[in-house]
Image (cartoon, rainbow, N blue to C red; front, side, top):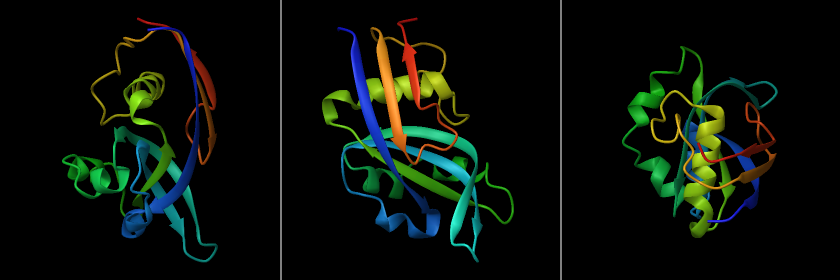
Length: 140
């Protein structure tokens, strides 16, 4: 493996009740606890819960085995929210590992304590509340 730089633009945010709108594409997704402002039709993100990767993010979120674990992080009156960043299949695991190692979401286990890839630069843009926009990681 060689040093790599990845750029991911995130779209979002989809509330749990609107998750049908999440793209059926290869990429990385983030799961958050959010507060929905019904008057302004906005969401405020409170907590990053989980980061994942999938060949089809829409289907993965719809059928995720950790869904009930995610819900445990949602306080009364709040909801789950999701963001999506398109990433080609060949890069997904490395990008997911970098994001998990950097942000350490509570429902992730793999990659929280170690990063098994060569030097990796991540440039995140778009809907990236609670995420670090630019970071560099080295193998641990």
